[in-house]
Length: 213
Length: 204
Length: 154
Image (cartoon, rainbow over all chains, first blue to last red; front, side):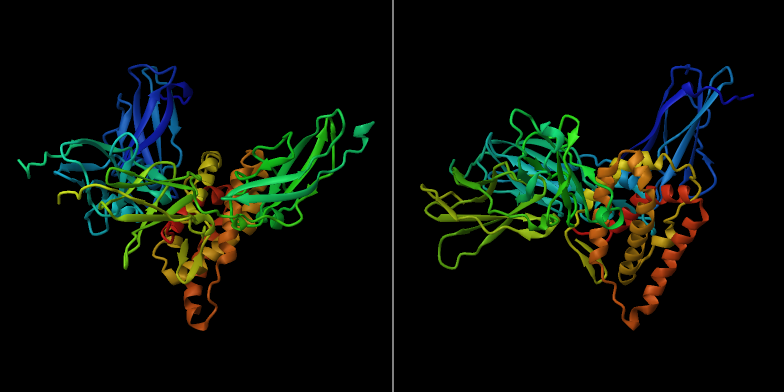
């Protein structure tokens, strides 16, 4: 027999979202014990039914991947967790209303920095995300955020840096000195959503100039 | 009792430059006393739909000086009413209200201060940092007949940006203007600054 | 700027609206216990043509300014979120005052379609008790902003 009388079994129920991978996490409350089991349900905001998340029923770990279940960008969602301790006491807690468009953070881009004699090329690779379009193809961040752009900086020395930026994926910093260390940082920005990834950093040295040897 | 009648502050006016809005008024002077002031604002919505609602200013409720930076309170491009009341102890004066509502699209935009330097063959510019609402359009060209003007968008000031790798013996000129999206306006262009780099030509 | 079909609106920075709403979102949405009802449903906002969008946003903003914001204001004062509310309301007013949906005959059917969408929204609003409806509508401003973002260019 389960009694709903112990709210301290469970706390901090929330979504963490990064590049649209949506993970539900929670913590054991002050009354929680290692044997407490947790069951996860989720629902679409505006719908009546709560749906049980297969694979996250009566688990002891404190996270559950709800990426597939919360993948429609035009919907908002709730999740709730019921904790039951060995003594039969239980607690149920719900998340805030969740929208992956609003909440997701952007991971650093995946970049290849290619040194040459007097330039450095930077190639940004597309990052597939776990969201599929109507026709089934896997979306990229650029397809979701129409004002997404890349900002690239090359620190030339301690005083200034070179700036490049735009929507394309290939860039090249010219006019560099051969056989010299440079520090490149590349970020993803989505201005209308005030989203900014942390930077991908590459330290790279231009090649030596062998033309006169 | 000097405080029996506390006069309301007079001569309210707003001085706005580069999206910094400063409300000023004539101080209420009572010898030997420190007078404080409360500033409140209402946007067009409040004045149209709930005119009794006034919102305390972020930084001047209360304040001691006869001025108040209301930049953080003016957060939409609509007319705002502003009012000030003087207080001394438990006494408060009547409210004095700005004669004409203030709209941030009337701010004065000045050409940006900039520093054009060269580092080796690199043409470098640093534009003053005017805050997050400002972007800069930087125009640069080679001072020679028929030279083409290049435009570079600089999203924020306060850090040096490389514009071009220069050819020796050629003079490069630069000018810049500010752009404020929130009010869709531009400043005038700055003075032109030119630099030239001496020395041997770069091996291609 | 916003481009709702032929309606253009300048002088509003969408991230500033988001920032204002995010400051109120948790407080307001936590008051909405009716998780099984959504006012701005898919049928209201999905597949809206550019031409139709100006009529729809005008009707929605007018409703929010005249009904939702006006009648929810006591709660705003109670929750001490007056500044953020003022930013949102005044920017909505700035947008609405610049919208001029065309009144020509050939766009009558389009405006009718937009009006049906709006009536769907208002109908759902009226089915709830007024306090619950005001709380829910205010809590759904993020759904409205998400839809408006499609018509926005920095």
